[in-house]
Amino acid sequence: MRWWKVVGLAGFVGVAATGVVIVRAERRRRAYSPDQVRTRLRERHSEAVSAR
Image (cartoon, rainbow, N blue to C red; front, side, top):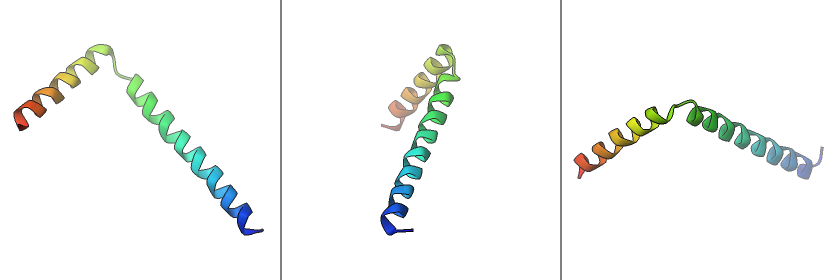
């Protein structure tokens, strides 16, 4: 196998792995209800304000 084939295959695998990571993050994000998201955002805001 020539080196450019290996590099091309590695690039393809990298793109596929990145897609998998993005899909998993999107599923995790969509798993929350709007009320859960709102509650978590308010918690994070209060933590940020108290850290100042």
